[in-house]
Length: 262
Length: 189
Image (cartoon, rainbow over all chains, first blue to last red; front, side):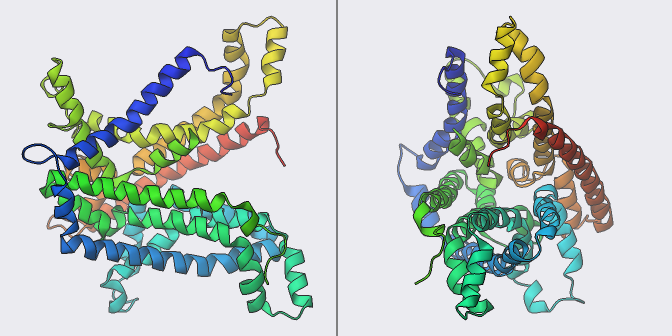
């Protein structure tokens, strides 16, 4: 497609690149601005704010919890769809598109209504862990796709039968045979989920919990330059997570060996 | 190209709003730059915190999203079709008018529906940009649900159901179009 790019193509590409980079450059400039000249004082201010560390940690724990819960549900789930219930695949695929379709604002309205004091213990509702089920739902499409691609690239039936004929039970099969083979997919899904949770604002904000994104918003309403610094930091986090996915995807030999295990 | 699009499409939410405030806000870099060459954006009635300001900001993730969605469809246009058309004496314009665009049409329409859904549902960017002071459906729902003095949760639920209906219709149309579009897609295995 790019063999013969007409001149107009380069012009459009230039406009696109400008549109992509100018806001980033402007934010960087804004974050470095001081009363006179430039410097790192905005970053220093943010990094020394105890709230920054606390809420970054809250969001980090939330994303870890989300990753663990969704892997626990989805690895056995996708495994059994591939192994025993291929007829359920259209249904699962349909379900995996739903979180794209249902806006987070609607999801959180439903969650707030469903998880009320009559149904769920208070220790769950009153802390940010309340958000984990919602985040698991939000990350479902990404996690499912990543795992599904991995499971497609291995021969689930042969691996399972080989493991069983060597005397392995279901747990051993899953942990020692299947898991090493889908590790790259699971990691890619984990990175995507991490980026998602570290940037999720709507649900946390409506449910009145303080997380890293709501902290960015709070800083933005009060101090403009540190908010630009936070924007750069947050963009860096997203970028790192996406870089992680690229790196994981670039190691073909490891995750997709026909039969792994020692 | 696709990698960049992927990164940009993921750059949403609150940080995006602040990036645009630093760019096109009242003291943003581009606003000041244009001011220096004699164009007073805000004097001409533009403000980032209005309908069109939000449109400019949403475009930042919408354009890459469009590229990601439409690229496979454009890749699916076979070289043979173009060759066949020019063999029969079609000009480049005729090829696009009679062959290329009709084949791409369902994909383009489908992509537009997805972009509509994504912009319709977006909450964080608009909220951070306007501190919630613009009347968009998601912000209204947030306002009505989120523990405000004026809150009226039932009206919020009603709005949420209405929004879900709009999105469902959008997605149903999308799936119909997607089925039509996949007729021409090369089966790769």
